[in-house]
Amino acid sequence: MDDQVTRLVEKTWAKYQTLPKSRRLMIAISGIPGSGKTTLATTVASALNAKHALSSPGTAATTRVAAAIPMDGYHLSRAQLSALPDPATAHARRGAAFTFDGASFLALVQQLREPLAPESRTLYAPSFDHARKDPVPDDIAISPQTRIVVFEGNYLSLDRRPWSEAAGLMDELWFVEVGFGVAWERLVPRHVRAGIARDEEEAGRRVDENDLVNGREIVEGRLPVDEVVVSRDDLGWRPDALALAQQT
Image (cartoon, rainbow, N blue to C red; front, side, top):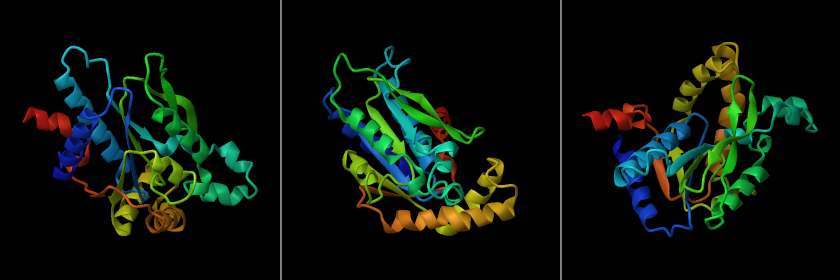
């Protein structure tokens, strides 16, 4: 893995070892669109689960100690966007902070922060179906055995309620730093592949008029964070980098 990712995994694992069994370790990774938040979150969670399996042979095979939870599931649905006072702007600006259900995200974080007990139940986060272009409720299970939760999303360190309230409940805030030009180069083909734009020209306009507008808000309104992580495109940022590293 990339050296900075390895350091974050080791730091998180050491911190987890000090926690009482009634408490979860919660980390929020934020950054502008196209920064690599999802890749970092899934890579870190995968590495932590691998460490857990090695430290608890025989009992960890069916237990994930860590989970990566994307904020994508908290997008307002297309029907909800259409019900807003200015639906045309809401659909055009989908991905801006006001097009997310921040209150529901905060409610999940508050539930996960409650002390774990024998009677604790599995909680659920929504996912996002890119084919339907809408959230899927209660699609990601977070069991009581999931003791490290790595959230990722654009606004998780935004100094505005309810995002700032959720940030205040985290153990650590990480921010993925990337140049706007690099983000643009990543986002344009991504939008075409996902069917968000018909071609690169349309995708470029969307990036300029929405994604990078949101990006400036994310950078300018950022809370103080515990870690600034420089975005990389190399193999060490991929979740399968861990498996490859273990084979060498």
